[in-house]
Amino acid sequence: MRLGVVIPCFNEEEVLTETKNRLERLLGEMIEEKEVSEDSFICFVDDGSRDKTWELIEEFAKESKIFRGIKLSRNFGHQNALIAGLMQLKDEADALISMDADLQDDILVVKEFVKKYKEGYDIVYGVREDRSRDTKFKRWTAELFYKFQAFMGIESISNHADYRLLSRRALDALAKFKEVNLFIRGVVPLIGFKSCSVYYSRGERFAGESKYPLKKMLFFALDGIASFSIVPLRIITVIGFFIFLFSLMVIIWIFFEKYIFGSTIQGWSSIMVSIYLMGGIQLMSLGIIGEYIGRIFQQSKNRPRYIIDKEIK
Ligand code: UDP
Ligand code: MG
Image (tube, rainbow, N blue to C red; front, side, top):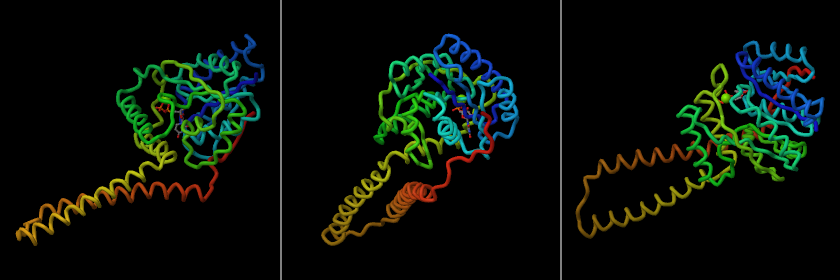
């Protein structure tokens, strides 16, 4: 079985050498044990790094033939970098494993992935059993996100990030998803085929800092919801409907107050409050609708998800 490992890297000079050393040892071992074939490889995808990441990748590739590299023309973002690697290499391996560069995901799980592949699974998810070493904030927001996704009716695997194995035919299926704002972990369950999960505990970043600042994380979460569910649009409709019903009742009430009981109300504050309330709801609704229109806009332009600058085989 020919295995490929794909690792997107963005400004990862601090960790890359250690990652390379550990993976070299692991893959060497697996080749020796005849778990995977000798032409298995590890490919680093440089996502437009501004530090020495690419120079390091070039060095690795010179040192050993198991290392390969793809350099994107600029920073396309984690998901696009990953898709670039997977699509570029899918015809050269029986299965590809994707992982982060920062050694947060236990690399020994790779052996487990391969075992499951040999048992006939096309998709093997790496699931974090224990997030105690993530920051509290990250854990809390992640949990909230999974709950919200479930509420929106999106099928997803909790605590699974982009650490997984995909067989060649699963990759061929993934290639058919031409979405621009690709949220890979949301699309993979839509592929189908036989799948299973492998559990591990997630560590801390080996070195360097997270390449997902809050802003990137929030937009990423938005992609994960708006690309898979139209429930937010429905919620707007439902809210609008109830407000409409409520206003009908208010109209009837006002009618009775004025013409039957003959009292007029000094209603300045209630008017102001309802103006602000309605204004807020309308702006929010427009924003949500705008999100979807924006997605249609991006999709209709059909721009490439990534552009490759250089490739080392
Ligand atoms: N990454 C990338 N492009 C980006 C941001 C991140 O390729 O624009 C890579 C990064 O190098 C790492 C992986 O995506 O290999 C996950 O990033 P990170 O570990 O910083 O995220 P966190 O674990 O903090 O969520
Ligand atoms: Mg990380």
